[in-house]
Amino acid sequence: MSVHDPIRRASTALKPQKPAYRALVLDAEKKVLRTEVLFAQTDAEALSLAAALAWQCDVELWDGLRFIEQIAAGTGRA
Image 1 (cartoon, rainbow, N blue to C red):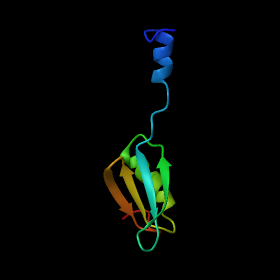
Image 2: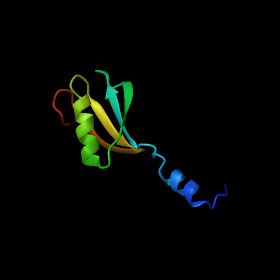
Image 3: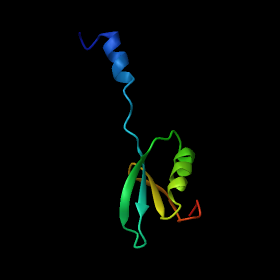
């Protein structure tokens, strides 16, 4: 199969992309407890997913190296 084979090109194009959104779950001292990968198409969708993680701990939302927002524990928003 050559690299110019349309089936190979199509299957390569359909591989899932690496998600860019990350939620950092923080402890009381603002140290990272864990990182969650978020599968979202938009910042708004990613914010909604991150807010769901912020029921006991603050959560920071990142898109690659771009900081989006910090969500305070129990509030659903910063």
